[in-house]
Each structure stands twice: as C-alpha cells, then as structure tokens.
Image (cartoon, rainbow, N blue to C red; front, side, top):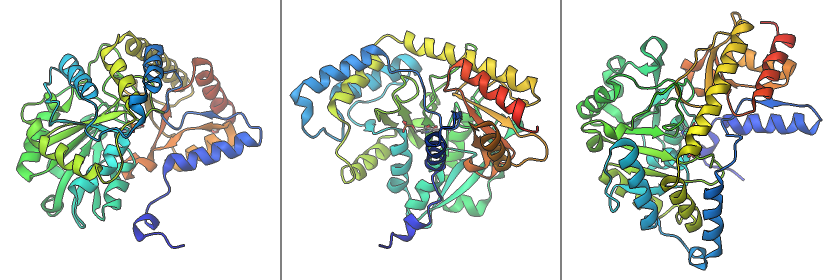
Amino acid sequence: MRSSDRVQNLPPYLFAEIERRVAARRAAGVDIISLGIGDPDLPTPAHVVEALGAGVADAATHQYPSNRGELGFREAVAGYYGRRFGVELDVESEIVPLLGAKEGVAHICMTLLDPGDVCLAADPGYPVYTTGPLLSDAVAVPVPLVARLGFQPDLEAIGRAVLSKARMIFVCYPNNPTGAVIEDDFFTRLVAFARAHDLVVVHDNAYGDITFDGYVAPSFLETPGAREVGVELFSLSKSYNMTGWRAGAIVGNKDVVDAYWRLKTNVDSGMFGAVQRAAVAALDGPQDCVHDMCAIYQRRRDLLVEALGAIGLKATAPKGTIYLWVPVPEGHTSASFTEQVLNQADVIVSPGAAYGPSGEGYVRFSLTVPDARLEEAVHRIAARVRL
Ligand SMILES: Cc1ncc(COP(=O)(O)O)c(C=O)c1O
C-alpha cells in the first residue's frame, strides 16, 4: 500500500514516539516517570462525570448529533465567554463544537489554506501548527517566539515575501511549551498586524484557565477588532481534566466559523450529545474545581522550579500552563539531554526542538504527576545524569 505524499511527508508525531518508547520500557519492567506529554493526572470533576452518565442513559443522545452542536452546548460556551472574558458570542453564528482544540488546529488549515499558501506558526509551538498546513499542501513558516520579548513573536521581523503569501497565523497564550502569558498590548498589535496583512488570527486558548499567582489570562476575542480578524480555539481538556473526552469549540469570526462548519459537515458528525451535556455541566457548574486544580499545579511548579534550581537547571516559574520550559545544560542539545535523561534516569521530558527550531536549547517538563514523582524525577536526574 502506498500512502499519499501528504501523509508520507508528515514527521513522526512527537508524543506518539514518546508513548511508544514509554510502553516498550514499561513492558520491560522499568519504572518510567513521564513528564513528557501534557495529560493531566487529576480526575474529571464528579459532577461532570455524572452529567455524562445521565446523558448516556438518555436515548435522545444515541443518534447522530448535529455539527452545529446542541443549543444548550452553544449557550454554555457563550455563557462561559460572557462571564469569564466579558465577550458576547452569538450562539447561532459564532460557535461550533470541536472534538478538542487539536481537531480545530488541523481542520482550520483545510478551511483557510490553499496549496502554496503560507501559515505563520508560533515557534516553538504545538506540533500540529506545522503539520496541519502540511496536510493542506500549504507551507508552515515558523515565527520565532523571542525569549527577550517574553516569548512573543517579533511581528515586524517577518519578511515581506512571506507575508504576501500568508493567510493565517497560529498563536497560543498561555503558551505551550514556554509557559509565557500576555501581560501587554500584544493582542492589540496582533489585530493591527492581521488587518494590515489580511491574515486570519487563530488563537489557541487551550490553557486559558490554567494560571497562577493571581494572573488571569485574557481571551484574544476581548481585544477590540479581534472578532473581525480571528477565531479562538477553546478547549475543556485542560481546564476540567477532560483530555479523553474530546470537547472544545471554535468561536469568533462568523465567516470563519461558518466555513469551518461547512468543512466539518464533510469530515465528522459532531460531538456525542452526552459529552455536550457533560461540557455544559463543566462550564455552567461550580468553578472551584478549576481553582483547586490550579493550586495543585502551582504547588508542583514551585516544587519543580526549586528542585531543578538546586541541581543547576534554571527554570523560570511560569504564570500559566502545566509546563516548565527549561534551558538544557551547556554542551547539550535538547535531543541529547532528553536522551540522557531517559536512558540514565528513566525520566521522560520533551525535547524543545520538537516544537520547532526555536525550541532548540530547551526541554519541557510537564507538571502532570504527583509531588513525590516530581521529587523522584529530579532526584534521579541529579544522581544519574552528568549535568
Ligand atoms: C497548545 C495546545 N493546543 C491544543 C491542544 C489540544 O487540545 P485538545 O485536547 O482540546 O485537543 C493541546 C494539547 O496539549 C495544546 O497543548
């Protein structure tokens, strides 16, 4: 069998490779501590699980859902955006459910890009920002996130030739993998930039509620003019520990949302109705579960920053996400350090270069294991890896 050039040209998906290696070593009896993939270890809140159960028991959810989503789901997303960000969304035209933000990242490329078009992709960034364009026969151009600019892109440094072909830009704050957050007028500048160059901004808001130290992350859509130039990919995965449930939404510019919906009617048949009802329970229900979870991540963040610092690995405490973005010791590349940590300490971290060329020189640690495992991971690195 010969797969398409499109599929053959895909690089191996980072986490699929990591999962394969973890499985192989675990099968051989090795106790691996995985700080690689960002998959929360904490359970989905009980009231959300109960809502799913009630939804499953109702035969009305057993038939094909609609790709527009149940009105109740769209109202819950709109209610959340209103309460959380002060953003009013029209439930008829500005919200379509996603089977997770990842689905949105891949399919927005097919929605907006023609062969040869350029997609500007935050670098380092979620790997699908570059493979999504590839699957649309388009070209992903990495836009470096600059450490001295707080891991924002230098929009002025993007060349004219690239801009003339660019149709969209992916950004994400709170940022995976750097943990950077927006505390200045970046979104305002991004709206002006998108207007000037006729670009669609796709803001990936997968970590909007995972923040620390009192910082509250904005939605891109709060920015004046944002709705004219962009959409946001919203996800319940991280906020409510629902990575397995596949629940999110694309919200914002109605032309983009409508085009997205048209594409989607030919790709899948929507989100399981019971999952939509569970999502309503998450969004409409008590939010103390989110705050409690952030407190746990913040404690783990502090523990890991301190423990890594004590062995000479300088991590800055991020104000958001479930990751630490850590410069590798001198003499290492991100890949060589990752290999050494895996082979000698049985700890998995993610090599920064896997998130784009600008990720070279860093590794990413996930905060998705209990305190004792984080301590054990650092203990093993200190004892077994030459730093
Ligand atoms: C930046 C970013 N976007 C999107 C996703 C995918 O989220 P979802 O589970 O909603 O598909 C992730 C998952 O880790 C992510 O880190």
